[in-house]
Image 1 (spheres, rainbow, N blue to C red):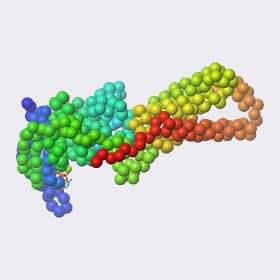
Image 2: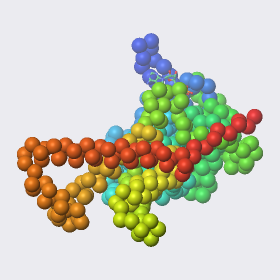
Image 3: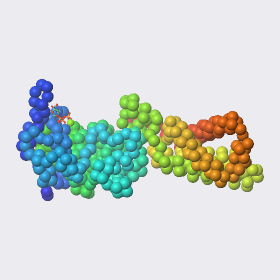
Length: 415
Ligand SMILES: Nc1ncnc2c1ncn2[C@@H]1O[C@H](COP(=O)(O)OP(=O)(O)OP(=O)(O)O)[C@@H](O)[C@H]1O
Ligand SMILES: [Mg+2]
């Protein structure tokens, strides 16, 4: 096995107002390629300081650090940044994802810094998200994901550049037991199947037990370094009682008012939802026309339009349910109704003006006859009409939602 990390006599001092803090004192540590190492120790013992140095984010005050044979101390900060980008994936306690940015875009980001083309970025990001089991959630923004899912996005982001090593500082610090074990099972799989070296800081014994080597710090020194058979996180997961009714979507922060507000509003709506609505609408119109002809034997425009509205709404609600993980919030319904109505107007307006629609001729003739003030009035009525249509869409969406995709009833807690 090759040595990936070699620290010799490594020390880190921090200058502060009250004097010098000796965060790391003469550390000697070697980590081989393919190891899964847990770093444990009391708060302030120097764990994060070590991780920052291992991750080339910071330099030691004294001593040497070699990463994959490169002497990091001797490199310029640009060279360190390149090595970091090539060799290391970071995972943090707070996930550090960009808000209002989809999982896919978050995962693409390290490749943007690398200057990869858009197609290549997308392909690799989708692969990384599939590897962490999030193929179905790639268009979700962080506030539409549970804590565990957000951490998996962060792992995909760390993986996407294909680094030989992952550094994780308390990756499960914000997660409950089950979700922590899920994240650990994923890390173990990456370690076993891809040979990725993992160095992970944790406060929890159960998490440290999943590593094959545990290094304990106290006051900036290594006080023990033991290799032992690791606990299999996937097997531990099996032993837990079945999960409670999933309230995954309120993940990170019921306590955080900003998060609660984001939660209430819901994130941006994927464009595919509008495409599904258009399909549903077209199908509804066709069904409506057929129904009028074959069953009612009348000529009507209102009935097909009503059919169109309902099928459109069903399409939107089903899409949200399936691909967005939760029903549309009322804010999202309002945005969807308005944007969709304006979109339809933007498509139909020019087609009408060009004389391509069946109602073009009578409408244009009529407008031609109108004088200045009447024309303005007609335009005003048109805008009002659009607003009414948007409102009608909003109401149909609200009415259809509970029929098509009822909200899950809260289940009793498992003791
Ligand atoms: N930027 C800094 N400036 C001054 N002192 C610092 C700085 N960063 C860390 N320290 C000090 O260095 C020591 C080690 O801190 P470090 O963050 O590495 O601890 P830790 O083991 O990660 O703790 P925790 O478990 O609480 O995260 C602490 O005494 C801390 O106060
Ligand atoms: Mg720390």
